Length: 336
Image (cartoon, rainbow, N blue to C red; front, side):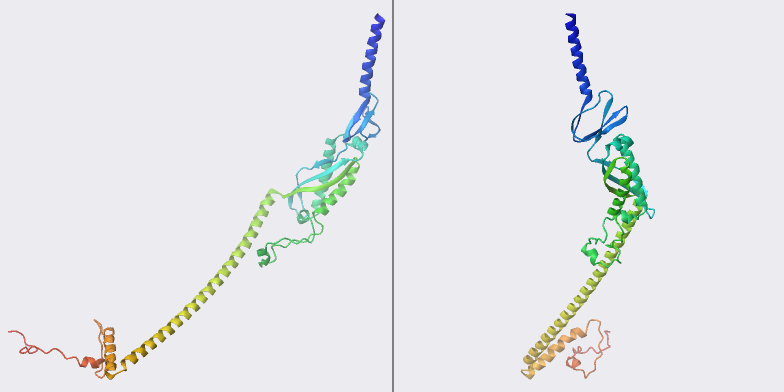
């Protein structure tokens, strides 16, 4: 009985032990990773890159998983000087993957160390490249590019300032390629394959940014003032032409009015002449009526008129008889 119990316990222990040993010896590798087997901290054998079930020496060997997928590097935002000593804030990013897992594990061990090494190498190469080129080379992406202009700005004579792009020798894309090529060689020593490097954002330093904005506002203000000046000149020209045309119209209208009045007076005079020349009495009446119309115009309440006795205007006045003086009342005599 005791032998059977002992035999059963031993069998159970062996089964459990076998399961433990098997579970410690077996491991799986998925498609997103690769494995380095280490024994007492040292790599053993070649990296396991195929997905599936694999085995190792239990308890002694350890499984170290390494990413197989493309990884992202997001560099810190750093201040860098350009060739003309302009301080700019540069933000870069890149993509990389582990090409040599064994070398990567021996030199870096984990992704945290790899990110730190990427910061050092890519940051250094970015700083060196930007320091060798002017700001316009970092900003512009292509050469021989024609800027899009607003029609009004294109037609305006602004002294060749607006819409003219400075010449560049290389451009932003070429600078990114330089950083990529130099960094790729250095990172290869760590088992890392660099896939891409790009400038995510390039901004001015805050102090420089304020100065740039002030200069931009000043330039736009000059352009606006020039447009206002040209507009005022055009307005003055239009107003002057309008006044000139108005004077011409008024002069032409006045001339036509005078012509019409002259024609009307001539026709009226002809009508009067035809009416009053029908008989001597009618002509004499016309002369008398016209003379009577002139008296109120010439002789007013405070008017003094000196006329010759031979004047035609005076002949009707000569015919006026004064009122006779009363009888027995000589001039100059008063009452007793």
